[in-house]
Image 1 (spheres, helix red, strand yellow):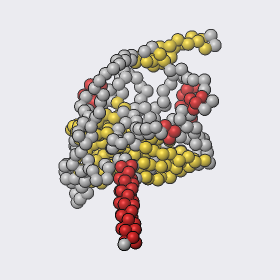
Image 2 (cartoon, helix red, strand yellow):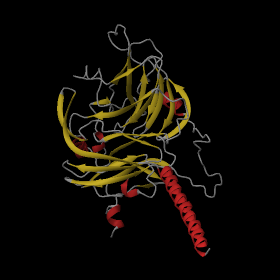
Image 3 (cartoon, one colour):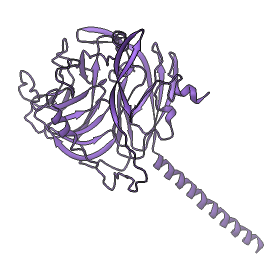
Image 4 (spheres, one colour):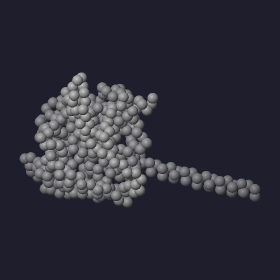
Length: 419
């Protein structure tokens, strides 16, 4: 009788521990599902030869590709990127638009949150996206002007088990706009600064779409980027403006664009015949291939809001080609988008920007604080500052916030932090 009671007590304890074990395992599974998956990428920085505009140059790239590799993840995932620097100088990588909450040490601004990755050394970044970030972001070098050739897209797909807040596209493609310089952009900037301390970034020799200048550039016909499409299908284009300092108009001949997102967040969809995308910005657009099967130019050109007489900008057009699959007689030349705005159409640019609205759906809320406790007024201005240099008096332009302009610190922030 005593033995039976002991056995019963033992079975009860075993049952309790089994239930506890199941609960712990289920909790672990729940935590894993909430945290998302981990992804690992290897980036090798090294110089490679590229031929564009009738000449060949050696330039720093990631994994010998221009633009660099695309990082693809789902919302809530974490990315680890091991960067091996086989170049000639120190470089860091910045994850543009990624929130990196409480993780600034992997954000990339050189000598602000990390020292540069020196030649023949490596560093592994932990890239942590915000819990609501979904869409398209990008990465680029954050050292000098190296981002001209070291950059790529980050594609953040909906979390597992969820979908887009619009009809799922049939296919998608990444479109990276970039600047092309025949020379080394870092050397070109140094030369420009020696000639004129107020000089801006040198004017590029061409723009590129996915690494190619397009049909209108010298020695480029036949290498133009082509997107093969099927009639009746809808494509999601993830557009990244990696051009150094230029806002850009973008259009596709004969096709409307439906803007559905920008900078890793969804917007209320709106239809437009063109977009204007700022440097460093990303934009997600849907395009339905509803025209007669043929070839159609994708085209982009710089938007300049300054005086039209200012000559210091790249007035070239960069093109790619939408090519429908099927049996038809190819045109002598693709049609050019008649709706692509001219360089100085300021009102058109403002009209486009005025259409943006937050999606603000239950699945993608915009949590804006409603109780205002402090009001701050900030005046942004451009000022003409007088300086003296070896007996010569001159002026230079400096921006300011509330009449306070930036002064270069005597010590790097990172060094000051650890003193």
